[in-house]
Image (cartoon, rainbow, N blue to C red; front, side, top):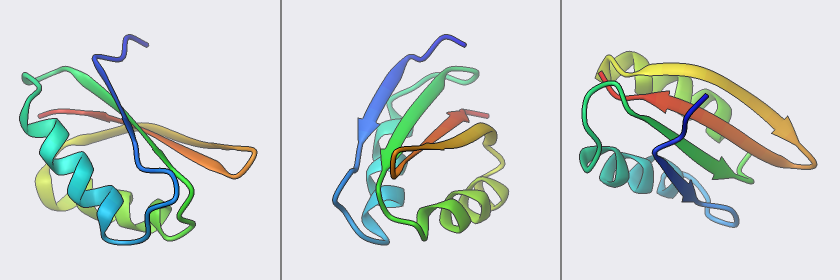
Length: 75
């Protein structure tokens, strides 16, 4: 999967991962994919809810050694 942008929000607590992701996604074009890195366990639910509200697509998410990775495609 091609990533057009990586947003590192490790160490930040809710709501900052979503805030930073939203600002970054605003700079992408429709169809482009952003990867967001987070260490906040709550971000899993936060990102699922956020993409539903905004109609963006959560392509996938995974956890690796305490880092959550979210791949969001801009609608």
